[in-house]
Length: 130
Image (cartoon, rainbow, N blue to C red):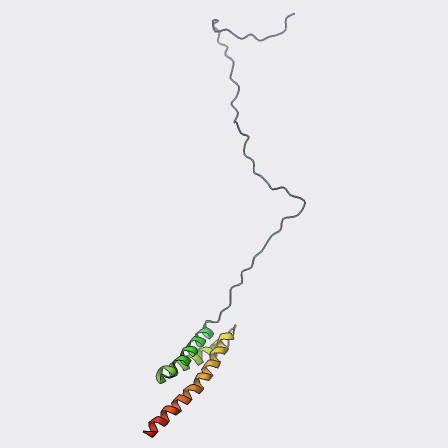
């Protein structure tokens, strides 16, 4: 007995039998997501809280106006206007936190008031003498 061997037709023979080509496979394997190896430790979740910086804009404005008033204390009208605004804004800034610049504005305003009284006294004495 002869074993069953499939016969392939020859080109010179006329036949309708044609062998099907093998399927085309991609050259690279399909892409799989890569997961990092877990070593038995659970993943940590990090929560970052960004606290907004608290500022006291009114106290800062009072401090700035009091400082400018101290620098310009030799100009009577400008000094009085800036001094009043500096005292008011610094006093309002004392109600808010942080109070640092508001306190500094009040202290500078107090020093400015003393210097202004001295300048006013000297100015009045000069006017009275002439």
